[in-house]
Length: 441
Image (cartoon, rainbow, N blue to C red; front, side, top):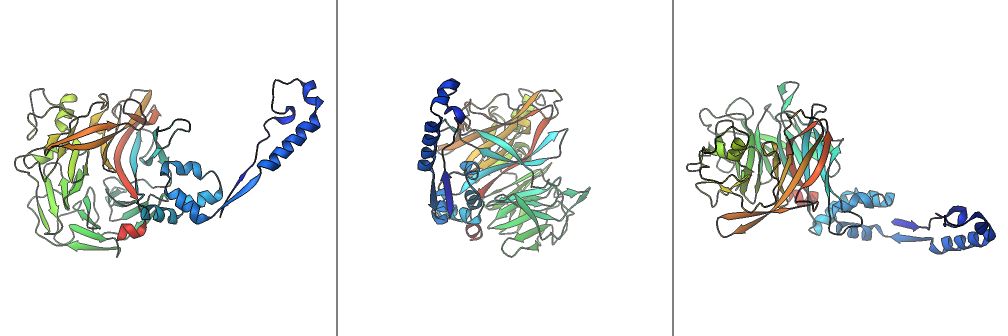
C-alpha cells in the first residue's frame, strides 16, 4: 500500500515568512504566530492510503516519460514503477510504447556507449515534450561488427569481434531493467553477420567461412537453442554485410558489392537485383523498415553533396530522381525503382547526412544525426539532432513525410551536446515495452 504524507512547510522562520517585517513587529506576537503555525500544520497533516492495485492501474495509464518524476514521490511508487507487474498491466491495456536506443562513440575520448532517448514534459508548459539522450552505464559496450536485432523490449547482440577475433557469443540486454545476460552461444564465430527476426525466431547469416550446415543459424527464443540450416549457397557469395533488414518475412542483406535476399520458408538465398535496380548502390547502409517499406538515406545526394559525384552524373537505378535526402522502396508496389520521400519541408539542411542513422519509431521515421562529421577536429559545441517524420500515403505510389518536432523548435530536437569531442552514431534501434506473455505468444 502506498502512503502519501503531506505537511505544510514552515518557510517563514521566526519572522512568520515576511522578510519585510521589522524585528520589533515580529516580536510583538511571537506566541500568536507560533500557535497559528502549529494549528495549520495539524490541520494539513494527513495520510492518504492507496491500494497498490489501484496505484498500478493508474500508473499504467500514465506515459513513461512521467515515471522518473513519480519514482521520486515515495519508495512505494518507485517499487511499483520498476516492477514487472506494471509492464504486464500496460500490455493488457494496450499501452505499449516505443523507446529509442542509440549506440554512440565520442571521438577521441571514449569507447562507444548506449544512450536512451528520454522525453520529459516541461512542468509549466502544456503539450511540450523536449527530448534528450541519456547515458546508460549499466549496459556493456558492443563488440565491433556485431549483429543486432530487437524483440519487444529486448536487444540481442550477436557475435562481433572480441580481442581481435570473431565471437560466437550472444548477449541479451533487457531494456526494462537495463541489465544484461549471456545466452547460449552459436556454433560458428561471426563478424559482420546479417540477422533478422521472422516468426519469432532469430536468423543469423554469414559473417564466417562459407560452409554447408551452419552458415545460417536459427535461435529459438522459447527453447533457447540454436540449430543450423543446410541449403545450396550461391557461388562467390559475400560473407560480411554492411546492413540488413526484414521485409515481407524475407531477410535482405547488403554487402560491399552485392545485395542478397534470404527466404527462411523456402531456404533460398538469391541476389536482390530488383529488375534493373543496382540495389547495393541504391541501398545506403543508413536504413530502416516501416510497414515492409525500406527507407534509406539518398546515396546519390550524399555523393554530390560531399563532392564525390558530379551534378550531371547519376547512380544506376537513381537516374532522374531529385536530390531529396530520403529514399523509399516498397517491394509490393515499386517493382522497378526506388522513390523519394516527399513533403519534407522543415528537414534540417545543415545536418551531416552521411553519418545519420534511421529507425522505425512506432511507425514514424526517426533520423538521428550530427551537425558535423566525426572527423571534424574543430573545437567547440557539437550536437546530436533528432528528427521525427510521420508518414502518409497519398494515392497508390506516393509516400509523403511530415516532420514532427518533439521540442517545438524548428522541427529539430537537440538531444545531446558535446564540447571538444565528436559524437558518432554507430547504431540506433527501437524497442517496444510489452509483457513477457505477449512477447512469446
